[in-house]
Image (cartoon, rainbow, N blue to C red; front, side):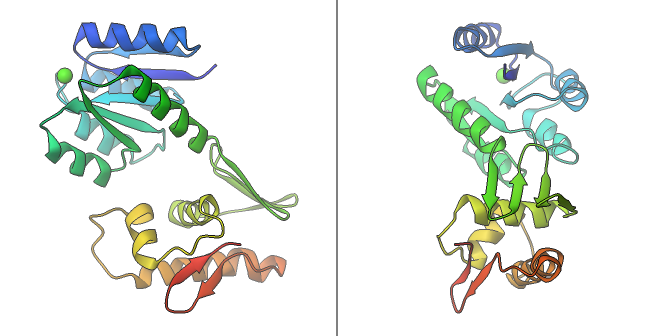
Length: 217
Ligand code: CA
């Protein structure tokens, strides 16, 4: 059963979302305080977190920023309609999705499903398997050690199989919009991946599309 943490200080909203999610078969935990929520989410492994922005003691953006230093739990930010600045901040620091209040519960449920599915994805490319949930990459029985950025880049290319991804797209998704530097970093990481995978196992995973970017076919 998927366990979802609801961080929301408006009791009525928290209760409503919690009841709806439990009706859909999820297990839920509700916390109304930012600092308490952060401690709790660092200690427990939730399948997804719904995070309000305006919270007592520590706001949702700060909670997310600190969570992302160690954990990749999918996070959907939930906030008031006019707080557009929070959307930019939230996506910059690693929110997976974003919804404004008031929201339709069906839409929230749909996004929860998509985000949980994405975080549980298992990509198979020949004898290469990439497990997003456990962050494990294997070629047959051999485990391949990748850094977080290497892993994220590989998973992103696999999620978009047969689609050419430009350096700019990869930079936006894997490094975030606030990344300062140039797109050469993508080339550098593709080279790291080729050194760790292609060169070791004698396969070709990522193809270079001259002048466009990279693709896994
Ligand atoms: Ca609030």
